[in-house]
Amino acid sequence: MRVSVIGCGYLGAVHAAAMADLGHEVIAVDVDAEKVAALSTGTPPFFEPGLPEILSSSLASGRLRFTTDIAEVAGCELHFIAVGTPQSDDSGAADIRFVDAAVDALLPNLGPEDVVVGKSTVPVGTAQRLAEKLLSAGSSATLVWNPEFLREGFAVKDTLSPDRLVFGVADGVGQDRALAAVREVYAAAIDAGTPVVETDRATAELVKTAANAFLATKISFINAMSEIAEATGANVTELADAIGYDTRIGRRFLNAGVGFGGGCLPKDIRAFSARAEELGLGSSVAFLGEVDAINLRQRQRVIDRVISDGGGDPVDLKVAVLGLAFKPQSDDVRDSPALDVARGLAEAGALVTAYDPEAMGPAQKRFPELKVASTLQQALLDADIAVLVTEWPEFVQLDPRTAGDLMAHKRIVDARNVLDPAAWRAAGFHFSSLGRP
Ligand SMILES: NC(=O)c1ccc[n+]([C@@H]2O[C@H](COP(=O)([O-])OP(=O)(O)OC[C@H]3O[C@@H](n4cnc5c(N)ncnc54)[C@H](O)[C@@H]3O)[C@@H](O)[C@H]2O)c1
Ligand SMILES: O=c1ccn([C@@H]2O[C@H](COP(=O)(O)OP(=O)(O)O[C@H]3O[C@H](CO)[C@@H](O)[C@H](O)[C@H]3O)[C@@H](O)[C@H]2O)c(=O)[nH]1
Image (cartoon, rainbow, N blue to C red; front, side, top):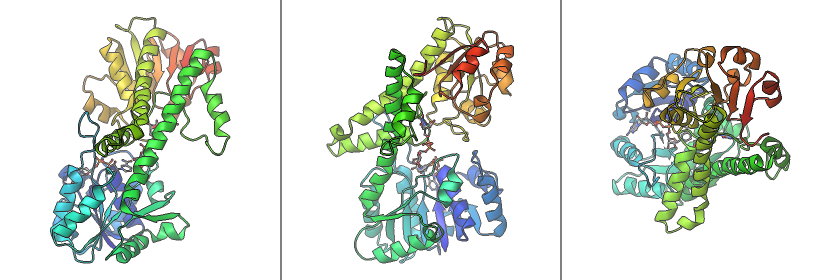
């Protein structure tokens, strides 16, 4: 099929390359000329395993092209909207101006039988409003809401083999055509057995928000348990293992630590709460405010722990911060707990040196005073204490004897609960984690 992708950020760039990899003809549009130039040469402006490979092969095959000129999408049968929906202000509401701008720019280029496919994460009710916008502009194009569930770090695999596909359509003219088009564009995944949920547009929008709210709740639940475990001498990892064996609960997303960050979970639960307030239903999801508060408390808990384990006075305390990305296999520092911990310690007067295998450039853009080391060993050199905040494999596999030889004092805070306390203590370390003795 001939498809366009509007917005070439994490979601759009991966989606465009994956669609071309599946054999579709893809035109991908972004307003950011630098991003378009980088992607056109096969260089993603962010780290995502597997993306450079499918990007290069799709560009070489001629099936994928990037442009800043929206007029080039004319003639495509299907148009994916993948622009950003960031948090707008302190209310937490989503800023959906980019979605509106994308649809406005698309309108003059739409054919009468085209299908517009919304992938951005939006507040429930947005799709209905956009469908009315198309109609009132005289377009007979149909709108499908098709939320995206990819995880950064696994984005290519998640796009090519998703857990499920959700198609939200409205009853009426164009419904069958729209469903046929999305089934065709995703035929490879559907033929491979991916479950498909065909529903109305409001449900499709809500599936996305509800999924992220549930994942965030699971993480904050286990982090609340880690506080209780710590006060009582219990072990939160063994607790998570034991409750996770119950298949109704499941072990995934029960890793206690410094909490969730990134470009999705934090902003999406705040946007959900803000939308519920607008609907007069704020109390129905009031618990999400607590999920957010527990999550942010974890960052402060880690900062406080580093200071207390470091001797109580943060001023001139030499801290090695291991990790800056919001999670491993990503260079994304949007709402990163690791970056907040580095910043919080520096603001308290500590001498912070951070290291991350991929995210130091993006981190320094947001926090220019941040001192970074070029290797893990350099970050640890002469440190009074280390704190592991992103569980990159090279940190998880770090030999405590090597670390001990480099550091001024043998002290470490494991803020992701991934190191073996016995091994670190045996190497002479003062070791602490969150909710584990
Ligand atoms: N990042 C993820 O893992 C992920 C996963 C699922 C869903 N989402 C959702 O997908 C959407 C995009 O997220 P992202 O992380 O890719 O954001 P992003 O900020 O990385 O990218 C958004 C892109 O849209 C471009 N853009 C803005 N206005 C435009 C316009 N009018 N025309 C063309 N391009 C325009 C920007 O220049 C930018 O490159 C959000 O709604 C997000 O919540 C993201
Ligand atoms: O047990 C866990 C699992 C995750 N995290 C943290 O939670 C955050 C989010 O992790 P993850 O969900 O893997 O990353 P994202 O790439 O942000 O993906 C989420 O957000 C995307 C954007 O909406 C969705 O598409 C995905 O389905 C959803 O998992 C990260 O900071 C993780 O460190 C924990 O603290 N404990």
